[in-house]
Image (cartoon, rainbow, N blue to C red; front, top):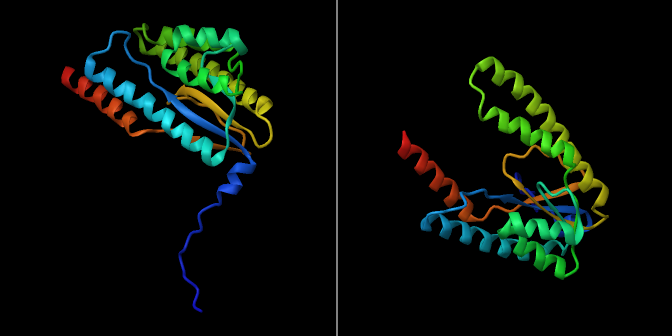
Length: 204
């Protein structure tokens, strides 16, 4: 029987089930007061995130560890902080924790605040020279911050476990090579991006 050339075998699900996994959910940051059409897209996004996560858990394994951008404490204290500042992700996290997942401290407070401070400085500087100097400090602080997040995941995610990470899309986290990353990107995410692009173009 002749050999079929160019056929690419799909990796078996068993390969992923046995290893460590991260389900990565992009955080969507929106104005506190949203117009109705944007609010509908955001609500649809989080509903689709839940659906995709449930599908991943059924195929790859249940979520055991949860990580969240800006979170510097774990457990019930961390959950109460998420409830105040990240209403949409809180609902998902609470449901997963009620089913046995643990919420992990993800950030180092000093690295997180330093990175945020430099980022805030960039938004108000006027001269190019000052911008270049602050950009350098911002990049250095951000690299250290993202490296810490990667270490936290590596140190706390057990063999064969699945973790859930909420973080903004433009993050710079480099994951350990033995962790499979599954990017959760529902169709509504593109709808939200399109909404913001249209608003930006309308202002030009």
